[in-house]
Amino acid sequence: MPEPQWHTLPINLTLAFPLVPHIERYQRIYDYLNTRDEVMLELSAIDAATSSKQTFRAFLERWERQLGFSADVKTIHGIGTKEKIAKHFNSVPDRINYVDNENLIGEAAFMQILSAKRPMVDVGAGSEHGLLTHRVQWVMIGMWDRRTRSLGVGEYLAPIYQGMANPNARAKQLVRVVDGPNERRNLWDIVVDSFNKNATHPEYLHDRFVKNVFPSLYDKWD
Image (cartoon, rainbow, N blue to C red; front, side, top):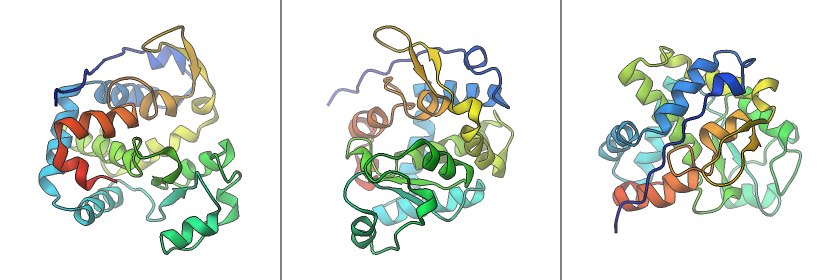
């Protein structure tokens, strides 16, 4: 199948989010995830280093520990009850203080996840989004930083993730979009949960780009 179109969308995050600490680092992350050839290097490395779903998950976990993320992974529940989801995954339902809406992750719960540096398994986002895509994005960012020293944070990447819970980062600002008029979005949605045709868009990254360009990696990536 032909490679899907990759679309780079320049956005000046410093102008949109001047009160967010270290906004220049989020700008570098955003620019990296917009750059196809750079992203290809991390995807190639992950594919080469893993051989199955099990080794893929172990790879993510190993990098998350190195980057300072919590070992307490958060499962975001999109359907059913916490108890049913937990039974499906043979785990224990999450503590109530991390969940404030059964069918849609609420703002308070989401900020708690970020603040606690917890990686996410996104059950509710759908198969195109992928359960693990946000975890992959942040591992890619950490690998890129190790490779290029563009952020200079090393094992302190997790506090950058945590910083996206900052009230100024969660406040929606008017930014460019690929099609149509400008829209109000928070920093998380712009950098790692957009609708653009690049690695800032989970569905595009997982179910279009990787599926077509790295089919062996796609088979390992839930």
